[in-house]
Image (cartoon, rainbow, N blue to C red; front, side, top):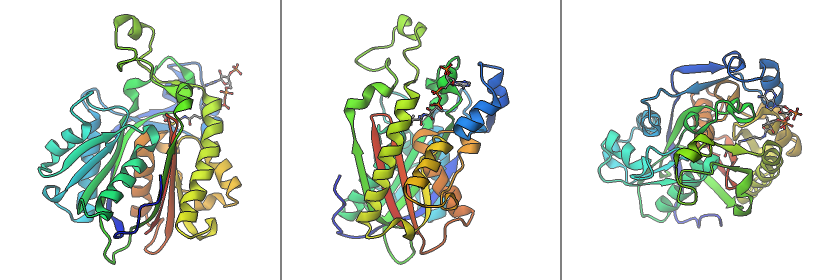
Length: 333
Ligand code: ACO
């Protein structure tokens, strides 16, 4: 995707997050599948993840994160023109999860739709909302990354079940004034030829849900871990460089890198390839595992609320996900 023409600057004016109460530890997983805390920690860095309650839908996670972001931005839900939810675990095939969020928040004048970009969903949504506001089509937008991956995981497959968790992160976007948060650059891309290394085969039109398909667990996530790992490193390094170049910067100018929270080893390799110290990278996958579209949005919220990022800092978000998809953005906080 080309960089948005600079019609008018757009800023993130508030962020929020929500994670479910229930914590699933590596020790809990050891009692479910043939794994160990040692294996999970050394291969991924993950210690815990949050699991949504059975009656908690993706829109519930999303709405809770959205409320925090609206409060942080001091924006009323009724004033939103646009709600975009990045998710691969929608409440239903339709209506869009964004419509459920609209109903929950009372955002009556907003146009609402979902984006299916897997883990890239939040940054895809950010780029879309930026375009709407830059062009004057919208004044105030809410972008959410939310996933309840626990519902599409095969809890008997140790290759995947140790990696993921549930959560939501949100950001409010408005035309930039002088309050910081300016979206300086965005970049995104996809490679549909790599569909087979990460997908959920059944549940769509290609392979509808039947009792046989469910018995064969075709409605759960399938992943070729090593292949995904390899592509994750390559695409995130090049996407990071692209957003930084589009912002007219070099990696040394970035005060805080916020990468997709999939695997600590992937993040360490990216840091090495960008010749940047790990101290510049924000990492919270230890606590939450990989929350898909929510991951960078949750991390952004935690980075700003903890004071890890300060007014005027350049920060970089970079993600990859099933599709494959990838995206990146530089923000002047
Ligand atoms: N516990 C113990 N052993 C395990 C586990 C586990 N949880 N999982 C796999 N193993 C075993 C394997 O069976 C294999 O055993 P074998 O050698 O006897 O066959 C051995 O450990 C090594 O397996 P590898 O796959 O080579 O392990 P690797 O070091 O590559 O780590 C991992 C696997 C963590 C999945 C890694 O490849 C990875 O992180 N890949 C990227 C995954 C990712 O980021 N996915 C998110 C995509 S984003 C989205 O859109 C959802």
